[in-house]
Length: 263
Image (cartoon, rainbow, N blue to C red; front, side, top):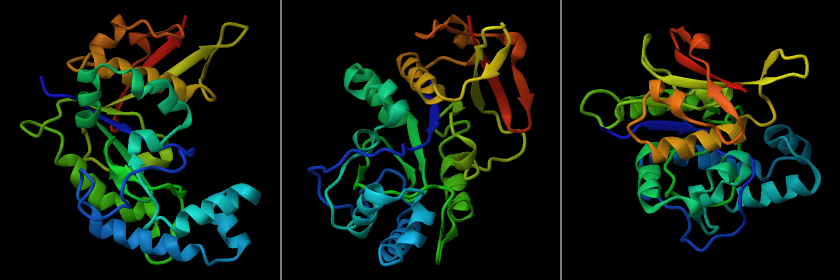
């Protein structure tokens, strides 16, 4: 069976440094370089903005703003790391790439694409420099990044899914901000996942703080079970005690949402 396509967000946190050559066109798995060049040029120019304007764009201040500005100013010349090593954050910590089996690591490279405000679509092994840019940002030239990336990213993703195109199942684990870039046709079959935790009174509420950690564990399971479909998720014992509740499955024009409940 064809490997699934798993869509992930990048992380806010990035690892420092790297030993790879600076980013260059032709080094990433999905060819969106013409668009990447436009966003890169616009991002580098923001390093000359006032501190107040950069703070509004990047969402950080103080030492974090200085570090982010320096990273963005040198984004074309700084060393690179594979994307899956550059991205740190809760989801990627839970994914724990270093502990994957060799076959799972190969599936990661074939199955996962990260939706990025700077790069569009990123494969796990793509070389990335340090940078900071949110998908919700607006840059002079490209404009609002969600709108800018939507046509090219949607076309590229549709080229990866469907009969004879390499991916049989799409697992969409994107937050709303990044999901705006992916605009499949109406009725497109894809799967989302929602986690519900129990309050002390027994009522259920959507997980907020630990949502990324829970999704990281799900990605590990999908890589270990590449032929798994939504019906197989019921056999999974989530490490933090969440189980699929088929009665809560939500079906709509944006796909099917599978609900896992804390037991």
